[in-house]
Image (cartoon, rainbow, N blue to C red):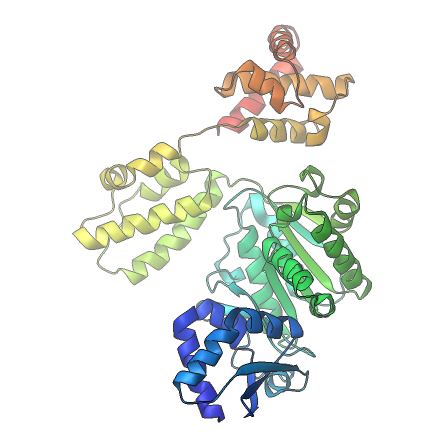
Length: 463
């Protein structure tokens, strides 16, 4: 068997298992030799070798047999000095992440260095700092992400980004990875979701390769974990995450974490991990305001008009969309994409009539629906409390009054029943909700500050 033969095997495996799986597991392998029915391959870590052996070993042997190669089994060596490792250390491997100024679609983030090249999650070429529209709700998160991406001494570690769906957390995570690689190509950047971290941990336990797991995650320069709330309640995974976190911080390596909630609001998260995540800078990406949504639409519309020169956009369309679709930037961008596709297909101008016709379902779904969780969060922020305070049994007036305001707003702004509202406030009885609603109604008539707070919060929630 020759290297050319291994190249044909690679091509057939790519077709058979798909490009994503090929990049993750087969691409890092190198052909070493074949003799006495044993095909020996080199893997960057024992974890990858064991995984391939278990999941693709039979397929590789079958393909080799069909190609006329007498192969009974495959075997793996794990060395740090293979060709790919050497090229990776020099920053010259074809699989390296390209510069952020010229990313390639669906490019792979790679971790490079002593262990060679390890494929991780894919980086989206659209998610760079150049393509991130900055407004008041996200300006602090953007500035913090920029500072981390510029490198230099670690000023806050970790950087913890949190916010709802479609507010830009993942965009900023990808942008940091692109920028770090562009500024310092030899940096070992590992980006993955919390679910992938947990999956790799479970596989390492299953195949008894914890040494390889620890070696991988504790030898990076930048560790980026998306949606960390998914490890909540997973005790063993949290334990390993805790030790990984400490090991990297001790080495002054940068950690960037994202979640849909602040560390203190993630149920099932161990207290020691919660406190570690609050060590550095915790930044909230607030829901978009009208100006930011309009800015995002204007940026996306310019690109769409350039790509579709025959399509015209009537005045007022972007303003209408920015006003009506307020919950999720992804939905907003998807609506614009649909409009341009529709206009391109039927040759019509994009005007308000087309918007109503083409986006009827999106507009109906985007009608403002206030949730109890959102009410609790807004009221807690307004009174400088934690959400956990709002749900606690504490009866001090500084906590009880905001809790009553939140119950009042939940009764008036949602369709939830009184018992359900009570359950969402720490398992309280519906009579407690009734009392809270009546009390706030009384205070609105006699206490100007309470009336002003309730009206301000109502407007914010309905905006």
